Image (tube, rainbow, N blue to C red):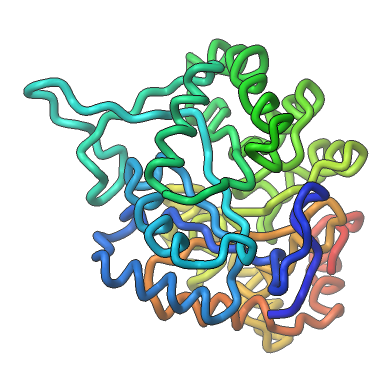
Length: 339
């Protein structure tokens, strides 16, 4: 991996690439019960292959991901990596007789999440993160899951809290030099576009809305981010897996089963990739970098073999003709910027 652009103007360039980062959700037992020694091996492999941007969240395994990542990073020189985590939830012990909801995690810590987007809630969340990570500084703090799909009928209330209360906490910390950058991490491009108009953030971490499969962020968010100098960190680039494995009925898409039209589109994209001898996941990783607002991409890894595999996809050479063919066949809009 080669030297590349910093992920934000607030961060200095590091000796290894920040355009491709390590997403630590899998370390929180997202898809399987990752043992401690396997988590450690994954992180050691990632470091040896050049990863220097690591992202986590209190949500991932209810603090487990932060604990594992912190145990690894606290033995590394602090000036050699970028670290981000998120706010929006803090955790409390369960009440007597209460069985905590695992919320999709295989074996999270036995704690109860509390949604809180206020000034005090963000401060409490970040204090817990510092304790779990055990590092001297967190570079980027993202406001997490502030979108309709996660908050449902409570969206307006939490959104108001984040804009009018929680953001002020992060802005105070940024002004004090405690954090270097503020971001928002979510799944909905329109919410992100509205938020960056209201609040002075440095970054948007966008999940699954600017991918080889679909590009709703191209209409509003990405142009707005570019105008405002807000960097975009592209995540969910595989759309939950359908752009990794050969698209099949029931394949994973957007955290659930893929509908027929999505499967058909993914198969058509794969056919074009096959024509050019390119693995579809490699094209999926590279695609987002065609837009000047996109500064980095993150991928999650919960198995050691996936680390080298992802690095190989990132280092792959993608012929320009592949992007042209996707446009010719109506799989990308003509105005879509490509690498």
